[in-house]
Figure 1 (cartoon, rainbow, N blue to C red):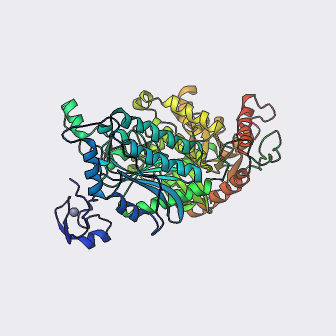
Figure 2: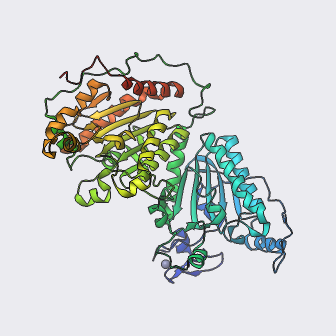
Figure 3: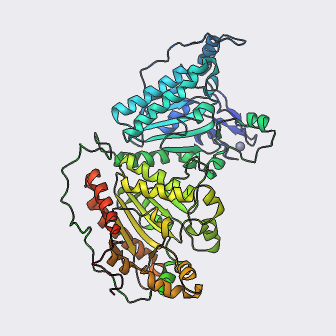
Length: 573
Ligand SMILES: [Zn+2]
């Protein structure tokens, strides 16, 4: 069991994880993480605040917790006696400490729960104080950081404590509507009503290493089901695997992660103009010609389409994570669909492109067989599509542009995927992208396979690497259906017009991104530079376009494909 961080005055402290006797100052220097076994001791709220915020920057909210005993609750002790004891024991007025502070010089509102105070239980005063912190954030247009530690609702206040789940949630919703970032940091333990409200309905959910979170506690689940629980049940790693949290962060990295998130949120926010709200926009920029984006002369290298298919599938070809490493900076990966899964075939998160904050989402393959298997060959499950959707919407709320990198043979063609609603997941992404009020640039970097690719590619600009392919079906699949045998894949590849120059001519793709010869795999560094330059060239002009205009043009862009394009014959080569 987790030990509580040592109190003042003690010289030595025994680790709750490995029972090592540790010199208190050494433990403190290590942020109360055992240097021997990594056990994260519980922190009280003042210690947590001190670890997270810039020194001297914390200003408590002026609001005081009201004296409440709304239902005159008595068990073996009257509730007011328990409250007094908790106050005396912690030096706090309630189970949460709220205020404003700077973290890495980014100003935010902050609410930090304290488990020592009646188990961090969510009573009316706690709900009220967190709500006030959220309202303060809204007033001053600040992001809100919540650090949770709670057994759940406070039973001594009956149904009124249950109502706090709704009270705080609607305050979080208000920040969401205003395009202000909300982040929760789950610490051990976070359960019940807190877990099922503001601990998990924020934009980004971080779990501190060693934290456990769940709605029902393990003891209850064991009693009800009569079953033993799996190893690591409800631990941070379990939550990550099941798509419940964006990341697991060791205590020493927590502040840095928050700084990165607050920086991205600050960059996307425009004072007084939440993204996507019309009426506060500058006058519309001159419209592009009715025919859509200017189409550059396609790169023609006379390569056979089948040869291009093989290059697009080359195992050495840079993956999305490779590009995030090379073409982008400061990638902060966000995980999970919040519903039950974290699909390894889709990766995404915040990153910088030439200093600008963007949301990057892409399919992830791999270079070795092991990597490819672990990533399901870049074939997204419904959880992958839902993760992508969650991140796109987050980007739009925060006013950040979206860059997608498409490299998939297609969506996962499995039984599980069908059971979990693959078709609807893809459909929802296509629908949402068509109205997403933020610039979207898609790059087909390898294989653009069918609906799984389009689920990330309904964009303002669709770019394609020189040796990438984009197709309604794989050449093998097409050959199997329309030719007598699969061996006709090369003919099918030629017939499908799936290369970048072909698709540029059809208007499906706006620009072809050159690759170093003989292909991106040969010189990934140059490939990354060319990709970065191309994305920037297409993204920068979109940043100033009013959101409503942007969405209207995006819809026009795809509306064009509704009629047969009589002027451009696919065969004109
Ligand atoms: Zn230890």
